[in-house]
Image (cartoon, rainbow, N blue to C red; front, side):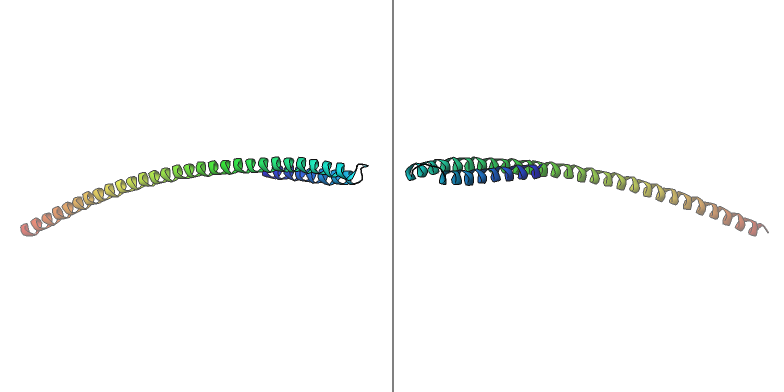
Length: 135
């Protein structure tokens, strides 16, 4: 889009420059008196200055519009990135909580298994002592 605007403004500038040069050449070769020629040149100069001023104002206005659009895009991207970061933090927190829960379950299960194994070994030892004392 900006390439189209740049191309359009280049065409406008070329048209204005051509108009000015063409008007100047036409006036120089026109069959008018010096005073009339100067008067017409002054009028053409004023017209060209007005056209140039209008074009400059349009370019500046469009530049400001594009700058504002760019600022809005950046703000939108900032907002999107902030949302994504927040979602990522929530996901990481959720995963961390799940892993912590699994680790705690594993610890409890391991403690239970160790206690059961110790109890079983103690029973076996007690049985062996009982058999040894009977024998």
